[in-house]
Image (cartoon, rainbow, N blue to C red):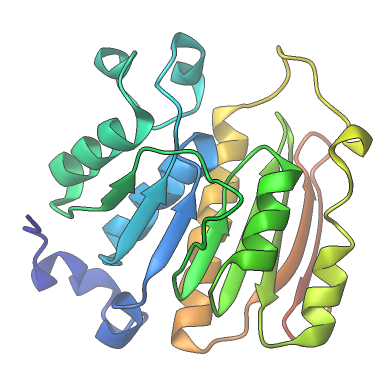
Length: 225
């Protein structure tokens, strides 16, 4: 049951109109970026949120995922649903399942907060959406691509990033994720959602080496920011 009230959005009324907040957003992956993106969007007033994940909360998730110690052992989507209801009063829709090859995922926006290139490729090829947002991260590296699914050039460029999984550089298990990188990237994803749902110019590609403080971004018109 949603108990979120319009008064909670007073500080952003001029920035995000009600019609934008009604857009359907599907987040695939409830880990670091997925969990904090869901929190950010719910706090912004987006209430038509659908989250997919098949995993359970583990001890190693405590450093940078939006879960409590008491959630360890619970399905991530169930813990996330409870947290967002408790924090914000928004009831998100959840799917405690792995994405299967026959699944068609839908939403005005699909966010691919997943680890595997194969899942990203599946969502790109079979997802039914207007925009696809693909955030990727390491401990001190973040990237994001926003794909207009009605723009053939944008789709062609994004398809080039879906290389084979054996070509991916895997980081050491002790250098995979940090809280500051997660929050920086989740904030960028939330801002991208705001921009595309309000018709504003949005960041199309983002490459951020947080270790060296090097940032490169291009907007939806192809101009470097």
